[in-house]
Image (cartoon, rainbow, N blue to C red; front, side, top):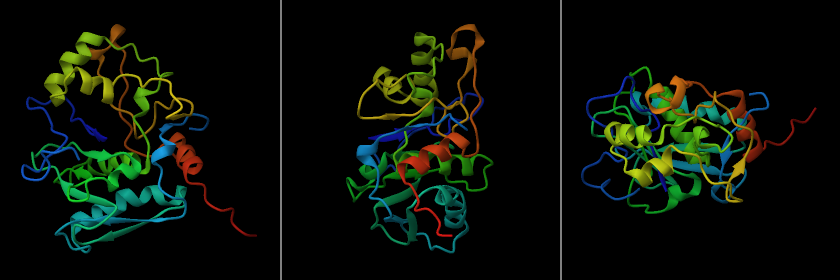
Length: 243
């Protein structure tokens, strides 16, 4: 599954962002005590190195360096390593969202290895955009196996269902099933590891007051939260440091 819309622009754009942006290859699918949602069945092998292909970019390019700076913010909290390489062969394959918006998308965890001839992650084109770092961290959260925090069954966001369907159809060209998959609460299932809900998670969407009852809203967080760190450490525990 590709998870979309990591960084829906604010305010609402006149043109909806897309989750898959390469017209040629991407028309196919590609805290304290508060934490996150993970899917353990799609976690990477413990203590492994994830090879991340950047296609035609050289590792020294400013764009790749910006991606690395943002993605590497997860590394102190997990037992994995990232190896960024040039070319199209990797466990994760990153391309740009060529539609020109600031959105991104990523496969969940090891689903990134599916369809190796296609990108598994899309990131915005402009690495100097203020929200670029946030988008990268969000998408790498998905790549590590995290789901959207706002979809936690205990979030109790008072969604106005019809406004959500209408709003996300205009905002992101999502049909009703897409809204259920990306926005509304996930079903309680043994598939997921539901830790306590974290409204400060980098995996949480901005919640628009126009899509809820009683003008309820939540702004997105542009940094990895304590809850994100707690989830990451649980998913990929590091060995205790030797005295």
